[in-house]
Image (cartoon, rainbow, N blue to C red; front, side, top):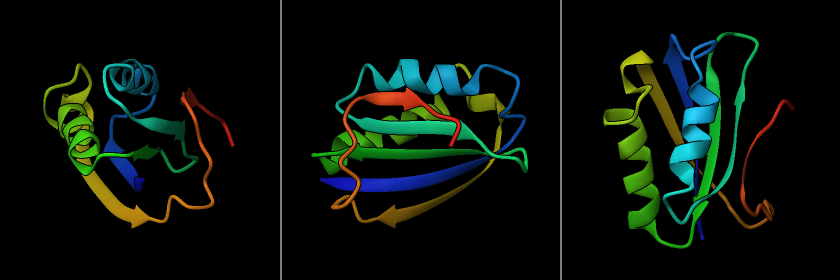
Length: 94
């Protein structure tokens, strides 16, 4: 299992960004969550058993999704998936 935490900046709130991410995730073998942040960014936590699957999901979101043109900056970091225990994909507020 591998995991990435990604922060998206740009016009990423109020444009259906989180819903687009959740819909896109349904087409990949990924789990995790997406949420708005108070500073106007969106935070994504995504996990997958396959590095290629996770990378394909993140690339699709950044380059070819319906909301890709709203993204101005991406900050991505590797996180440990061990204690996360996340199944499915959700939009969260906390």
